[in-house]
Amino acid sequence: MAKISTYNIDNSVNGDDLLLGTDINSSPPNLTKNFTVDKLAAYIRNYKTVEKIITDPLVIRAMGTAPIQLLDAPGANKVISPLMMSLTVGSQDPYNFTSSDIRAGWMSGGVIVSPPTPWISGLAAPLNGAVQSSITYYPSGCLSATTFNTVNYNLAFGVGVVGGVDATQGERSLKIVLQYQVLDFNI
Image 1 (cartoon, rainbow, N blue to C red):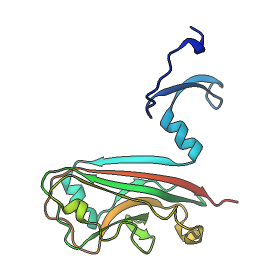
Image 2 (cartoon, rainbow, N blue to C red; image 1 turned 180 degrees about the horizontal axis):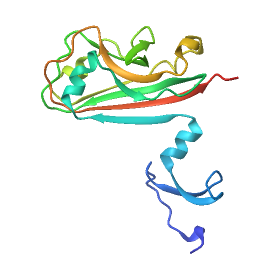
Image 3 (tube, helix red, strand yellow; image 1 turned 45 degrees about the vertical axis):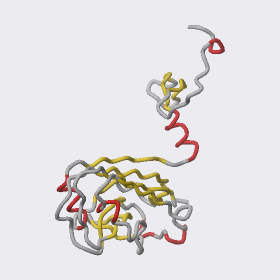
Image 4 (cartoon, one colour; image 1 turned 90 degrees about the vertical axis):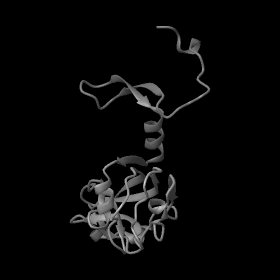
């Protein structure tokens, strides 16, 4: 193996690039492993990203009565706190959610129960337009800690359509990206 200082410099860093390191929690301990730049950055920033692509139009059309779960419940005394969410749709036949809004939040029993106001409100247009479109939503920093209480602990997180009827048409795929933190209140 050549000296590290003799390797070329990569001036085009990409999130999938690999770094070499030691995993102290491996079995056996101290195995040498690769780490991606994205995973290391997320660890340092203390946030994670989940991406979900839904290609089945029947699943997307039914979001009004069957929200899509993005994350499992995080565990006792923990809350999923979203930082950014984006929805992107293709350019095929538009979905028709009439007056519905897209809502994301904590889920209980397959229903989005919180927060009380939608995070993506009045923005059904990205799923109704006839062209490819994308919308990104940033809560103000993240939800205030006062929003969290024991009712919100250990709930799954999802996205759905509220305030209207399920879509009756549309064939496009839907891409959902959520950046989030898990806050642990077990102090």
